[in-house]
Length: 244
Image (cartoon, rainbow, N blue to C red; front, side, top):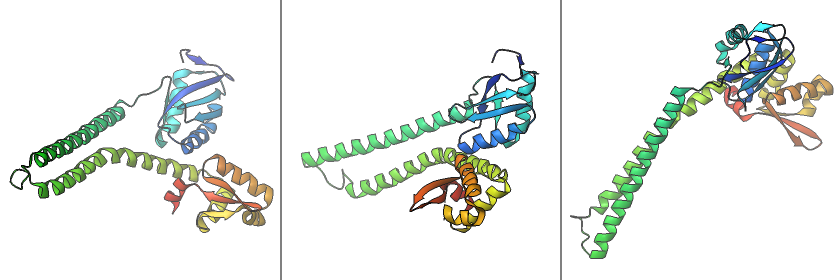
């Protein structure tokens, strides 16, 4: 955005760093909607952006600083331009090329050893002194395990970091639920992660239950699955990993 002053009531957008799932969208929207700075906040994870309207005319730098002051503590920042995490991309590239080199080297070694053995067998010169076949199999097996472990070592931190970030975002999202939403979520958890909508409706009423379930579904916390004449409300798998 090139303008310096953001006018009241006009739709604007900013790029967001740190957003990677639907839980992030909800956390950001909740935080900013109650900020007193902006309204009609719409966070879009696929675009890594937030769309909003200002409540009053404000300098762009002041607005960005205000928004970052609210969401930085939960792991997000906004900016005029799309931010590039150079360290993250560098680590990914190094890990990828290291893994590729190791795997390529292993395949080349196995191929060369196979060709070497085949040549000696065809020439009739294969014997334990020149071709230690009993040693080759355990050697290559051990080498394959070693290379697999090294590749896993380079890739595992990225997977762990993503899972940890989702868990943090999910916990923040759950803390922001309203009392009725928490009560229904507790009933689902107490019922091993799934419960029929008719059972919830019998306790809370059809309209209220429907509204709460739709809110939880929109946030990606539960799924609604057809179950005879009613629906089964099932906790999202990622939330199961956190809550169970």
